[in-house]
Amino acid sequence: MTNQQLHQRRSQVIAQGMGALYPLYVEKAENAYVWDVDGNKYIDFAAGIAVTNTGHSNKRISEAVKAQLDNFSHTCAMVTPYASFVELAEKLTELAPGDSEKKAIFLTTGAEAVENAVKVARAHTGRSGVIAFKGGFHGRTNMTMGLTGKVAPYKAGFGPFPNEIFHAPYPNDFHGVSTDQSLQALEDLFACDIEPSRVAAIIFEPVQGEGGFYKAPAEFAQGLREVCDKHGIMLIADEIQTGFARTGKMFATEYLGIEPDMMTMAKGIAGGFPISAVVGKADVMDSALPGGLGGTYAGSPLGCVAGLEVLKIIEEEQLCAKAMGIGEVVNARMTKLQESVPAIGEIRTTGAMMAIEFACPETGKPLQDLTKAVISKAQENGLILLSCGVKANVIRLLPPLTIESEVLSEGLDKLEKIILEVA
Ligand code: PMP
Image (cartoon, rainbow, N blue to C red; front, side, top):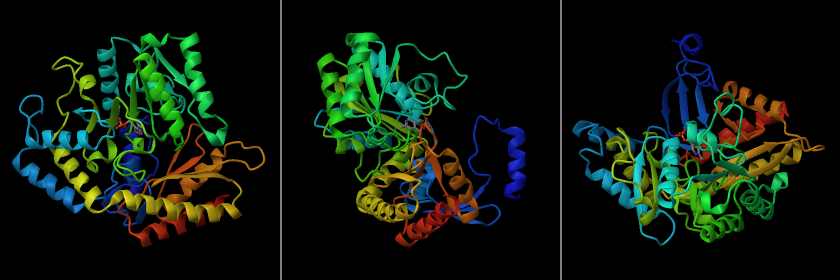
């Protein structure tokens, strides 16, 4: 089967709503390389959307999962649990920032983690309202779509959404939104839309992911913490894309000097095995009745053993330091390129969560077509790239944190060549 044949078959049986960025079909993948069924080799700057931070087909993770498979693959953690389920919760509650005693729950996807964090916040506060941010992304289920702050393609045609969800602007230097303006917007919501005593939670991403890789200033997060403390609102940090060493810290919240009431985790948590978590303050997490949280596959044993191995790898292979190193290399290379490509409006790197925003140097207008052209040239140049941004004018770079420096360099050569060709 060739890429072309599979793509043809795909179009017959897979609904278009499940988008396909590249018409390439993976045969195998190893660390930062992916091979397709036609034998082409790619450097992967997507890592399955910030999931395989520990590299594709990481031997240690595969071995752990194979050993688990030989014992059992599923019993349902809510019926007859297993040691890895407890051990992973012990490790994550210890690693989550802040001094409070913590507890965890496990789920399967990122959206489910966000849904459950909101459920817990509502159970704990007895309130209904939730505030999220424009440009934020929290998932594709009904509640998380409602929280997501980008209409097309995530919300278009899918309403109605749960009510009592409100959006405030996220601070964004490049687009002229200050921390003060964002915090003032919360006060405006409290004055115009919902009284703070009916707000259960404020949810934010420490670095907005799908929205364009904008980093929250520490003063903003601290301002959110103050607002939440003042009004008894639960602060939820959505670390689904930022977590597990991606930003140069185990969690990006560590940059912000705050302790959220809850954090959502998924993606990099288990290097590609579907498991997610909510970790939060113990008294908050205990607010739901037994049986009110969870799911059939929640905390799958395969995900738990993979997650335990991921944590060991992050520590032993110093992936936080590696992420910082990757960010520095990419920042230096792209800053140099910017000298000859004025369409590069801004380069943003928080560790290895890295983005290039294309904007017209004269008008500041977002350059979507240029961004699209970069993405579409990637495949023929042997590179896998992702875009993001509310205006679809940002290229994001998320290589595995285990990428060899020569491979990173080669990938950046390809990226430079593509940008120079299309800009
Ligand atoms: N929150 C954030 C910050 C995300 O980046 C994502 C996925 N891109 C989600 C939630 C949803 O995760 P999932 O696709 O696993 O449901």
